[in-house]
Image (tube, rainbow, N blue to C red; front, side, top):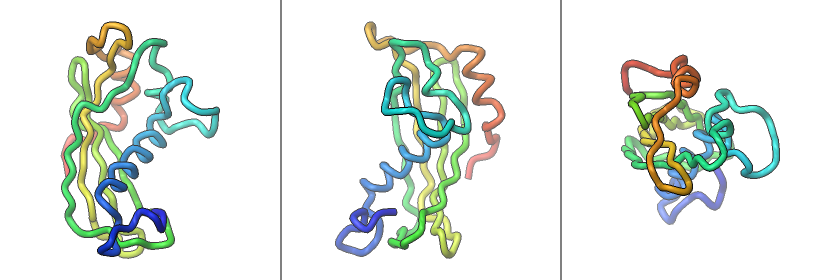
Length: 142
């Protein structure tokens, strides 16, 4: 959490929450290939290993603000796991918790798909991509 992420009410602004979800997703699954310079390896090399010309795009976000996330000078806790994996798309789920109290503050999911950069067509997940996701699928949602 950053000091500037607070809104006039003193809690983390909803737009900044979406940024936190993005940071958690990239930390877990890697940045898109060619984005930025190399750093530490992600937990799962999914986005940074897609073929050239393939984009990993967010199709939909669902966010439920359970409790306000107050600013603290320590990082929020964000759990990330994979939900439904379909033929050409998959869900990533998040649970954002207050780093001091452990209270659940945000429950969210992002629906993603791989898209061909030239044609704009959705691409089916490869067996290798499915295999990468499999260990992180949680069968029950929070």
